[in-house]
Every structure is written in structure tokens, then in C-alpha cells.
Image 1 (cartoon, one colour):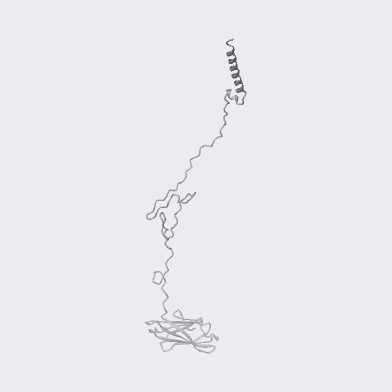
Image 2 (image 1 turned 90 degrees about the horizontal axis):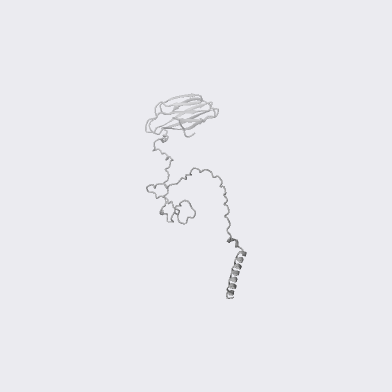
Length: 236
């Protein structure tokens, strides 16, 4: 009978241990105490990749070497520039001066326009010379179907000059022609053109009248053209 209390104690301890094992096995997640075999790993096939292409070359823009007397441009972004890829020139100062890093403006291109020519430059046509002998036409008498006219000749030079007078008439017949108070020259009429050439040269600064008589003019008593040495007469 001396061992009876200890038997009861041992039996109670065994019973408590049994209850704890049953409680542990009955709660959720108890399966973690059981060892499971590892699941097989699935192999996923990879898609075929294209063959590697040739490496792409990227052209790099290198800064140009600075020219003498020109400040090189900045290659780093300026202050306040956000997201920009290129350098910006610093703003010009209000005083008109160039700030640090400023590039001076390019020199103006030389003008290709030829300078205007003048009479003193080579290749410029010389001005027309003044006529040496001038003529002034006037009508002295008008007879309706005839008239007497005159060309007053003047030598504007300091030397003797010859002269030739030409008159163009719409119609008419030459009666006579003469130089008043001077040696006579030669006259001829052909196809309505009257030509008179001096007999002697006209002296320096001298004046002499050439007179002529025409008839059968049909009332048209004014020549359509009058020249002295190719220069048009005045007074018509």
C-alpha cells in the first residue's frame, strides 16, 4: 500500500501528456509537424531570342577647337536650364557689353555690289562733247507755196571749223542757196534732202548765215529735220 500514491501521480502525469499530444494534433496547422515530400520543379521553356546585332555607333559631337580671339562656347547646361540637352548662350547684359563666355557677332560679309562709276573711273563712257559748230533755224519769208529760210551757224571753239547743213523737206524744189557775206560752198538736193557744205572753214567764234529758197512745197514750209554736223538745229 506504500506505493499506491506514486502510482496515481504517475498515471496522472501520463494522462496529461497524452491529452497535450492529442490537443496539439487536433489544432489547425498541425500538419506542419508532418514531413511532406518536395514537389517537383516545373521547367518553363524560354522563347528563342534573335541573334545579337552589330553594335550601333553613336556619333559624338566634339567641341570645335577655339579660334584665335574667340571664346569657346560652353558645353555644360547653364544655370536654370531644366531638361535641356544643349548649352545656351548667356543672356546679353543690359549695358551692351559682352559677358563671360559670349561669342562676338560675326563680321559682315564684304559687299559684292560694284561701286558706282564716275567720269574719272576707267571704263566709264566720256561725256558727249559739245558741238563745235551750232545752228539755229528760222523762216525769213513765207509765200504759201514757197519760202526762204536761214540757218545761223556759230563756231563755239577757238579754232577754225568746217560745217555741213542738212535739211529734210516733205516736198519742194530748191531754187537757190547761199552764204551771206562769206565764201560760198556747195549745195545739192536729193530725195528731199538738202545738203550744203562749207567752202571755207568758219573762223573762231565767228557767225555766218546760210540762206535757201524753196518752192512747190504745197504749203508745208517747215523742214522735218535740220542738223549741223549731225547735231539738231535749235529754233525749229
